[in-house]
Image (tube, rainbow, N blue to C red; front, top):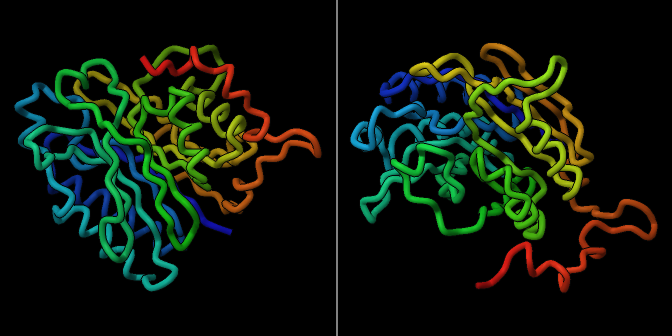
Length: 278
């Protein structure tokens, strides 16, 4: 079994040092508690609600920044073949001088992969350049982990892309703004995660924000969803962790019944209108 932990934190806009310690402390605590995979929120190093693109640039870091190194260092407490894996969001300054809403996959050896959010939400388009690559699927000691960021999850083509690349787990750093919903209902993004998990038979771990940032309240929707599409752990209000022991290899079996198979039963020749090439 793989212990998956999603951390619901409250980073402070503009305070790189405080957010570095906050996120690193969360990783250390999770590792000490036996976590194998740890997911941190979107833009956990910087905060989310930038006053301007110029402010975002002052908070942007490269993948070799010390905060990602501190995540890796925390993983060395149980390094070697069983090193924990951290997936966390950061405001990236690319070598091209552009800003990206990114997430890094880190273990005791360092940064394994960086993903740049492809689907930018609302005013993110005023700050970031969208990524142009599919979610990476990283072979780790604990399974094949794909990464995407927040709004990416709402595009079924993207989660299907990760599933077709043989992901066992999709890790999703996210900041979901609070929206109205009927009493007793889950946040809509959690419902989307449940559906995506079920139709692809792949586990999904979402790490959301808590608190209020420059007038924006967060959904506090941190959840771990099994490959069958059920929420098996959630945080609720405030800081905390969702934690679940999952058999991630179960994601590799796409059979629903003896004669039904989620991937083999696709009719790709009929789907041209979904993703036209022109």
